[in-house]
Image 1 (cartoon, rainbow, N blue to C red):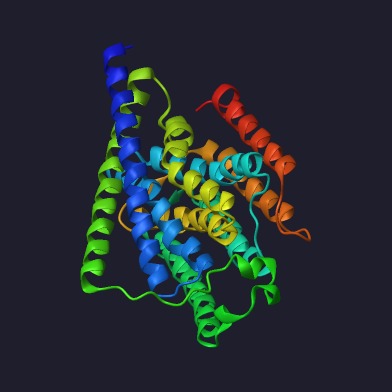
Image 2: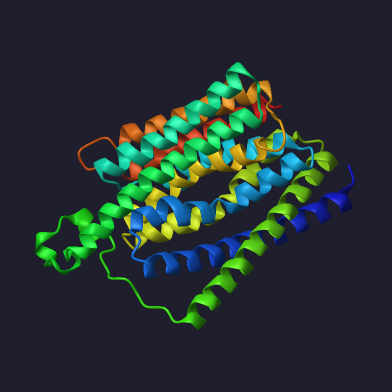
Amino acid sequence: MDTVGLIYYIVVFGISLVIVVKGASIFCNNLVAAGKAMGISELVLGCTVSAVGTSMPEFGSSMIAVFTGNPDVGVGCIIGSNSYNIAGIFGITALVAGVAAVCTKEELKRDGLAALGTALLLFFFMEVFGFLNIWMGIILFGAYCIYLWRLIKAQKAHAAKLENGVQNIPTGNLTNMEKQTNFSPKAVLTTRQRLKMVMWVAIGLGGLVGGAEGLVYSSVGIASTAGISQMIIGLTILAIGTSMPETFVTLTSTLKKRYSLAFGNIVGSNTFNILGALGVPALFENVSITPLATSFDAPVMIGITCLLLLLCSGKNHRFGRKGGLLFLGIYLTYMYIRLFVWYQ
């Protein structure tokens, strides 16, 4: 094994990861600021702007992996990220904050089921065809457009509440969940502020794309140098690495009691990862899928998503530290089996 080469790729991976996380932060923060200035609700921001922004590392990694002839890395990154997003991030958040995945019945029904439905749709394509092509890409991306349409309807309802003066209702007349929702009026931005915001969005996006390319390059290099399967690299190092933005956003949002943003960020990211980060590359290139990804990795992802919906379907629509420990235990068991039992 080339030790010097391995160290080089590890260093490149670390630098690229820092660039990706910072780029995601810049990209997401400025888009969120723009969204709030336009009076967009916290949940819609979480499911769209925050979810897409924090999923840009996965999206960029998947696109570049597919276009450079390494589809296993891209597929592994998406499936691994989705499993880690729920079991890992919500598990860690529950242990630190004492609570995680706080949501309303409406959010659970619309956004939680959307995350499960997209996972099942992907599994159907994997099981029946064993690959993704342009027609499946059209279906996946079309499904995301439908999901966005439903979110736009929710945003219109939120805007109607703003216009009716809901933000002026005394706090005592609001439910706990309503207190956590943004009812602030639109902010007024000057032309200079808008241009500055667009500039930082572009800088953040550039960091995401460049950093993602470095992540894929170094991941493939580590795999080839150390003799590790590209699928394993995608499922572990790359999946967790590219999910760092989601980790920070979800944990911070939960600690600040911005529960809708935290929940929307994770379920929205998982939905976008499948429909966008796998659907868009499939529009241009056939994406091959390994048998083990179909028989083991995807079912685990679906099972974790089902468990999330089950835990959040109770009266309080949330789970605490016991649920967090359960999720972390499941994820660590999955990683052990994948790395040491069914290694491929």
